[in-house]
Amino acid sequence: MTVWKTIDSAPKDGTRILTFGRGHGNHIGSHHINDPTSPMYSVAYWAWHDDERDVEVSPGLFRKEPCRVLEGWRTEWSYTPTHWTELPPPPDNTDV
Image 1 (cartoon, rainbow, N blue to C red):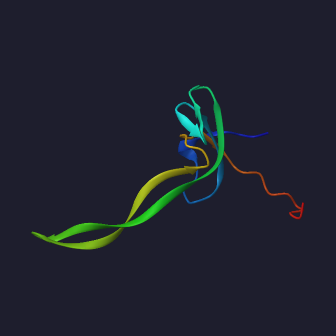
Image 2: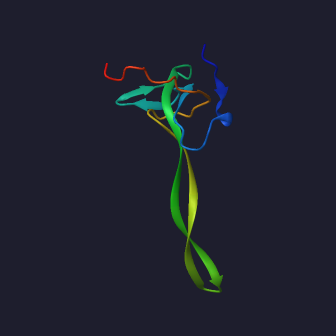
Image 3: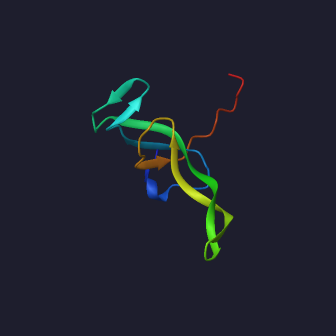
């Protein structure tokens, strides 16, 4: 039996998970979902982006420093996940 947890408890270390949310205001290809009750499922992961920022070292003098920018959930479809569960293990015979 699948146990769904709220998205705030999901791993944010790049682990792929199965997510669930509602489809209001989302696009799937050329199809627009206007029904806020449309269920949306996607394999997703939390993504970070490395960047640089300007840091002032003295008045008018700046240097670049690396920083991490929080980007958020990467999903197959454009929606905001509300719940998640672990992905099942792959089949034993991957040649199928």
